[in-house]
Every structure is written in structure tokens, then in C-alpha cells.
Length: 100
Image 1 (cartoon, rainbow, N blue to C red):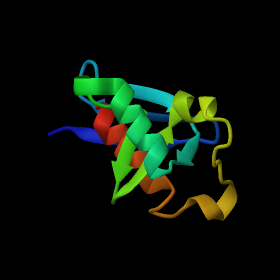
Image 2: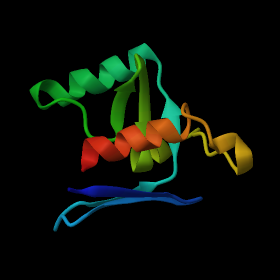
Image 3: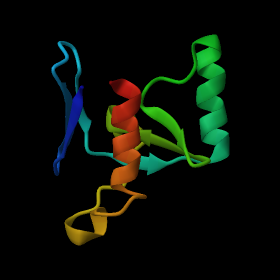
């Protein structure tokens, strides 16, 4: 049985699957909700290979996380109790699952 450990810190999101050799990921704690047009442009540029791992559609909403979110300029980085919601950490958790 594998266990996923997630550390959603203030600057870096880190995760590791215990008992798996290459199951570690880390990316900046940054997120941005994308418009449908922005996401469509990413898909067009990506072509048949699909979007890069920083670009996700979660519950119908397109997001960008990590370094790519920082490159998009404005990004969300909540602090304190405001970040403990499924719509905030849930997005980071989904991003981790797509990477491991």
C-alpha cells in the first residue's frame, strides 16, 4: 500500500508517495483561475501532447498552478484560515495527484 503525504506550505507545495522511488513533487504555492479563452489557447499550443502539468481543469474550471501561474502574473496565494477550503487546497491536491 502506498501513502501520499502532502505539505501545502506557504511558499512550496510538496508531496511524496511513501514507498515509491520517484514519487516526489514540488512546485510554487501559486494558483490562478483561467478564462476559457486562456485555457483554449494553452490547449491549442500544446497540440496532441495535451496541456503541461501546471494546467488543469478541475470540476469544470480551468486553473494554472506553480511556476506557470507565477508567469501569468496575478495569482492567488491565500493565507491563514482562508486557505483551508476544498476550492483552494483541493486544487493543489488535484495538481499533486496529476504529477504523482
